[in-house]
Length: 296
Image (tube, rainbow, N blue to C red):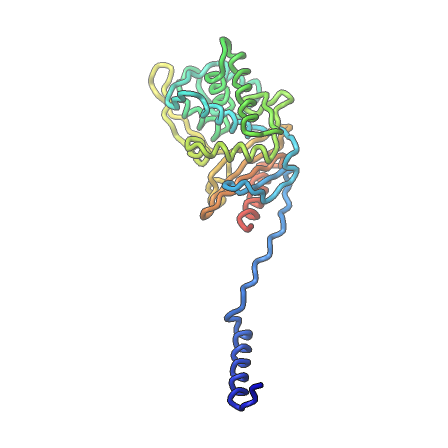
């Protein structure tokens, strides 16, 4: 046993030093921040996940089937991008049937003019930014297979459903090309998020859905030209830091819907809210879910 005064002094110095470390916290392990409480959203359904890993951060009625409004157009876009030998610069002549459809359904419109010849790429912008149902109709008519317009559109919707199946979207079914359904057009927050995540793998899709405004030159019936100007209905673009897409939707049955995505640093979060109460509220719900996800 050490009992010398020298040893006692050494023990005292060590004890004092240890007390100083404890007092200053120089060697203390920093406490980890507490996990934030899940947010409360108005939307009846919601889901948000890590886009890279698929890890879910939040779910509210995430697998409950609901009407989806124009978020359906993400699948219309996906089906177009899957076409063999796709030429985004090929032209499509706008038919009177497309404008008649807009009027009869009181639908959102890209204001396509009969006889004009927009490219497929321009139609994709017209479908996604102002949520043009006329542009969606034109794409379904072009890429459906059949001898009549009705048959082509039906076959195109069949392509939408077969694509949903191939992506493992078990709670999704389409009966329209634009979300104006006939009783069996539905999906879930989880499925729509998965669909958006897959679509974002396509550079064309990413470019379109992150665009806030577009002015584009379209060939007319007489081979002249006119300009179309479109503004994205996704109000998160430019107002929520890092937003990169993706699609709004609304309707009497759907309420107000929004599929959203944002990137901060090396992380992208992506999600969906369905059946919110207003345009403003769906954006507020999405902000809450992304704020929460980025803190996780």
